[in-house]
Image (cartoon, rainbow, N blue to C red):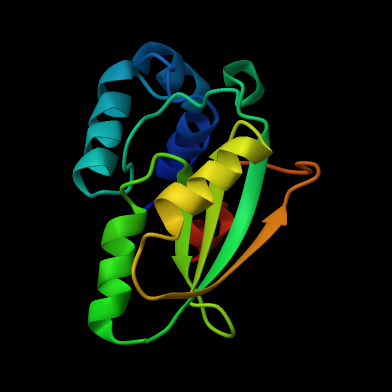
Length: 158
C-alpha cells in the first residue's frame, strides 16, 4: 500500500491516541468523517495498522523492574531456536524477545515486580527451557525514553 501525506497524518494521530473517535481524527487531519474512516479501514485491511491497545502504567500495577536478559543456547539449530521461541512466548513477564547477532542468541525484556519475582521467573520459568547455555541479566535503572509510535519519516520517503 502506497501511503500519502494524509495516511501518514492519520497514522501519526492514531499512534499518539488510538482511542480517538473518527470525528475527532477527521477534524485533526482535515478530512470529513466518511473519507477518514475509509482510509483508516484501508490501513487496517492492508496491515499497516496492526492493532489498538491501551498502555498501562507499570508502577500503578506494582511492576517496578525492567530487566534485559541475554540468552545463549547450546546449539543454533533451527529446531532448538524454534523450541526456545515457542517456550519463551508462553510467559507473560516477557515483554519483548529478539533473535540477535553476536555473542547471545536472544535478548528478552522482562517486566516483574521486584528482584524476588525476577529470581522466581529465572529459576522456575526460564531455566527449565532445554538448551540454555548462558543467561545474563542487566537491570534498567531508569527509563529515559519509552515510545510506541514508529517514526513515520521513513515511510514518507519510501
